[in-house]
Length: 606
Image (cartoon, rainbow, N blue to C red; front, side, top):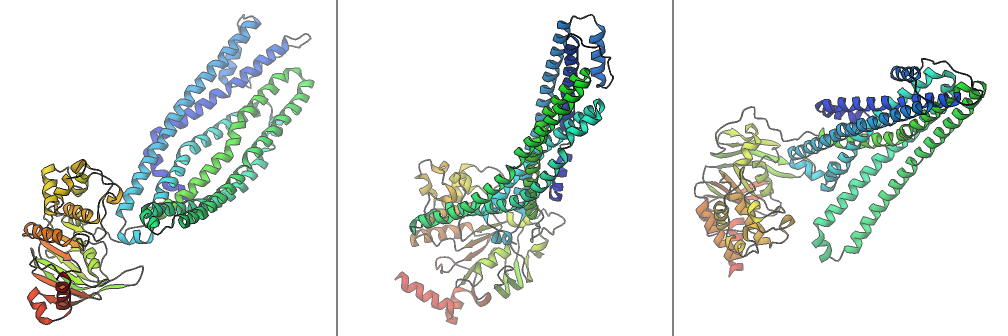
């Protein structure tokens, strides 16, 4: 239950709705318990009309309003028929009034729970975006989605229905028990005797439900992860004809989830029979003990009827104890899972205290840079030094795993270096606000990702305001994809599907390049972003980029040599260390890895 304390801030935020809802609950139950008292009075009046009945004196044990009403009815010269009719209309009006109050009760508390659900999902989504790259390397997308959907939904059942029914049953039981004690203490004690047994049953079953709920939520997370990975990799599954194997794997996880869910349902099924049994026993006790008292004193017939009505009124609240307790236990288990992520602080923190109005730019200086991936222990960069002047074009080459992409990610502060530092314009990047740093650097990733949206919106994704079509087309022209987009069914308004599934690999890469160029950044990093285009298109893109990048700092990471692009400096990485550095001509003279790669590329082209 301590995990649910994280929700107190939301209850305080919507305190007006919350306390107003509590007021409606209390008032609706107050008017509900008036009806049995009037009914008891009417039954007593009927009993007095029977032959041989003795007149009974009015006892002031009813509610103040009921007492005043009974005194008014008794003192008025109504016929018996009119007396019953007036009392019946009063009971009807009380029921209508209670119904109206119950409507407002739901409109305040249930609507409050929807607002809390909205705020909580926004909080979780915002926190997910604050978490750094290393977090997403150790947590699956399916698990993240499950916590944001299933867990938040279960928490909403606590902030809405569970809270409402809990307040409702507490107030209704309190009103009923107080009125019963005022009427007959002995009979009340007999009637309430089975309830302690019910409380013990609820405690035991709740403990079991809590453990099973945590297990079920974990299994649901695994099931969601399995489904999400299958949907994302459906082309791989089909190409390797693994549909049956994946279905078997999913069925295994689903079967485990089903067994545990059925086990929880069986435990929960104990609640309602237990409630019905205890309420039934209470009703029988009321009739038996009350009947004996009525035989001894006929004026207590109305009291017995009133107690039976109270017991029937308590049937739903008491039976809802189990359901409410189950919702609270499930919500506690879900909130515990949510708190695990919400309390996870990002490793990459914004250390800058003040935002600068200057653009991020200037010389890039990398000093004694070393980096080891925290979760794998792989050392990707070791004692690396590099100086890049503003406006220079740098080519970074190296074998697979040499640290090229890691260097790009360090420049964007996806990670912080283990040792050393990176400066841009004489400012350590750890002292530059993250938003300011990343908004002035465009990064075309090796693994292209496009959103399930239009071509236009994908290209203009990095802009703060909607881009005009001419601006989008200009960026697309620089990346040599404008003509192909015009050939699409709806041009720039064509929906490209999830992850750009409707496009070819080359088209996706060129659209991602256009998305980077449209930002007009100070620094642009291309990470092996031309691997899926043919030689002719590559030459065209390189020529366009040379024109576009004339006043910008550019870092191009690749495993190929672009002879049509004049680089100010070429860097060769080997196992995270600087192996070669210089211009194209200088590196050819050294006859090292670069010269060997250049000769192999000439041979392949020929």
